Amino acid sequence: MKSLLVLVLLAALGVGGFLSKPTIETHKAKAAEAFDAKRKAQLDKGDLGGLIGGVLDATDRSEEFQDLVVASKYTVKSGDKTLISCFGAFSQSFCSEPTEEDAK
Image 1 (cartoon, rainbow, N blue to C red):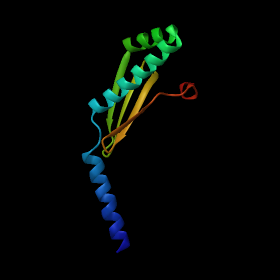
Image 2: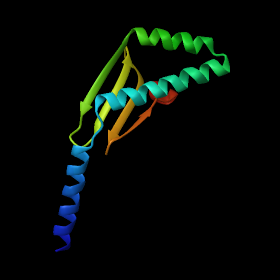
Image 3: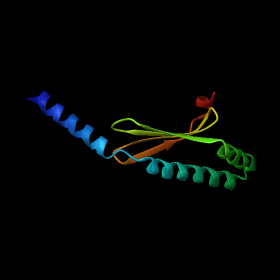
Image 4: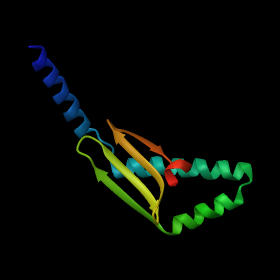
């Protein structure tokens, strides 16, 4: 009986995740917020080199959206370099930039 209850709960979570996974528009909005925050931080620090690098990265930008059944993934790349990755489930999207160690 307990295993049946666990299976029903897992099925409910799966259906909920499938019906509420974020769309590409949600990911794009979250990524734009992250890029704007990074640009503002660079301007506040007076880092013009980083700001110019960000503009140059934007010229060769490619986007990839993956539908993972109960979740979704959105990645923005410039050439082979990943600029930002966003993962989402249950109508929430979380974006992160790669660290220096990930870039190596």
